[in-house]
Length: 361
Image (cartoon, rainbow, N blue to C red; front, side, top):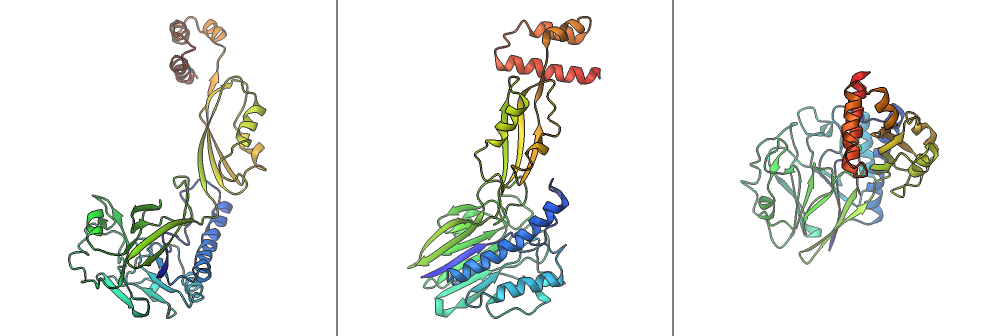
């Protein structure tokens, strides 16, 4: 039996320029990516894994330094009994000035080349590992499988490749059928950040740490074994933090403290550890100011964004009377002929008022 750990898309050095949190949080998150990378390597040591696969986008070439790549080298060299194989992706591609070629790697580390799919054999583990590294940012056509080496079916055969299982893509497009037809015992995929087990022996590990509010849900690493040509894989949660997008519905009967309590009583994730973006929806009393509500919740959440999508609850009688000679009053009068207990009618009235009142202002 062999045991392997499959990871990728760590994006060490990421600047988090496209996220909404501030510079200090971005710095913290960047350090946490390094911490998780160290934990993955330590995990492979403690679990006595035979292999650690890193399938692309280990780091951000644009921001990485020679000091950073030396740090990567030193962390990987500490796992001297683990065979570590790296297939570079589009963010850490192995071009002419690749940092991968600026340092000397320990004997336990193999970085695949860029010309074609190559393989490295581990006779003592009866295993042959195939892999390919990118040499540029985009690869729109994939002819790598046209001349795929003839495999020895008596061995464990594993492929490491960073790309997009999609019909059309600028990032090494592949079809699931083409992968299945390679007859590998396991195919470790990188590039897609959401973990996805496509078949019993083909999987995206996803990124071990989510990078923004578009990356919700469980994140981790894949731990697998191959025994007697039978592959078993599991996603092991590994991220330090999670991102949560949550909508909370309130109504015109809520006072300010009740809105605060509604947010405080969330039972999703860990409030003191995770990052939350909460959308407030529904109707709110017109004299309640939600502009700085996140400030009153700073001690309750590690990180919180409030997106206010509520609609002011209007005094319809007063508003109609004060606008009886214009389109606002006529609109209210027309809509009040509808059953406002029906949510769709009430929404139509309030959405319309919001637009009309903004136009008037």
